[in-house]
Length: 529
Ligand code: GDP
Image (tube, rainbow, N blue to C red; front, side, top):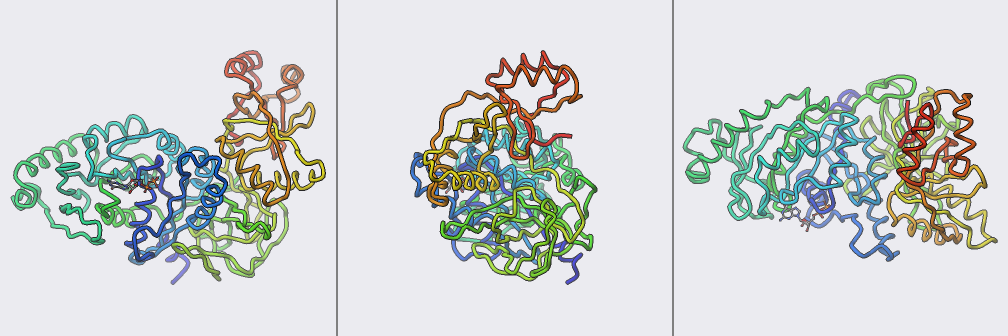
């Protein structure tokens, strides 16, 4: 197969949802269809169990699973599918945001009863800003839930999407009879038998045909006809270009647990979902079918065995092919590196591969060379953009609790920050170190890992910070900026990349500061133009 053909058959995507909507179940059913796993229950959910925040075994268990499920690849009808795992727990949102820089499209799972939930809103917003193509899967139709039209309205309003249903439920919950597939023009009857992996569908090319009455009963058939008419009147026809540009989102209905409606979703997905997309670097737009290799690190995973300090850096291949034992340029370090055992991921195993193509993810053993966002190329000095840090939600001073181990502590903090576990800020005034995180859980993870992997002990001290704002003065030499720096000295810090950050202690003081120093722009994301 030529490289062009390899690229054309790849689909790399992520499934996003609020916890419990059914992401793990859907992932598992997709793998079952691909023949990548044999039985249900094989894919472990990496969600944090309730009340487990102080259970370190739980954290380790979760980390173990998250390595295993970081990338799940399988073949389906000649297509190579790469699913990138995105934790749904809000304390790991930063991880998910970064993974979304490596996907070419997304499937959004929504619980039919709960509708659009908080995490879904946040994650979809990120996808929308980047125009990532999205397909929506409304799950748990075997349960009583919201009316389909009401739900479609809610999706449009809360997620600011422009939807068009490609399937439509016939009844719901107790009365759930099946799904009319608008995309394929057939009816799939619901039997509630989850052991069936392949459902039988009956073609109904004309919904006026009374075969529909025979299948679902006259009342349900008439109801469906009315509803489909309404669908046609209200929603635009599916437009593949609009979907690929991120301007239209097709919707499917089903029940992942019952393997129902999943095949329809998958068949449509492999047909319409984008092949690996071009990526913007600071220098230029890079196309997947370029000859030279390039890729970027979007995730770093520490070895679970504390005796082995090496880590696994996950690289998304953007262009060219990645080959084993070939020297590549680490652009930030200006060093050539060679990898003798790059890992590829298949369902739940990893395996050394000789060659990988755009869209694929390779895991490279790393002894501390990589940071999240690093670019690796055949030689060209390009830098991929777009792995921003967001302002953390929580801030605490970190103190050394064992003076004999200060080196270990510094190294541990450094490496955990490279992995993206949290963000480090160093106060300009006194050099004190502040750890910022998305969730409180991360503080325990850091403390635990510093002790177990680096032999260092730390304590935390509260610090009142509302938001970290990346400072961007119109004129760094202006009197206004100098005054700002002088007056706000106590609140100024540097992030890991030496960018200047203002740690605002309240929403009010932030607002006052912005009013007083209008030429000093504040950004809540570390990357800005
Ligand atoms: P995740 O947190 O999004 O990964 O959600 P899971 O896949 O772990 O599912 C959460 C719960 O919903 C589990 O108890 C599943 O068995 C259940 N579930 C998933 N899909 C369905 C479905 O189609 N119908 C019903 N009734 N339950 C489902």
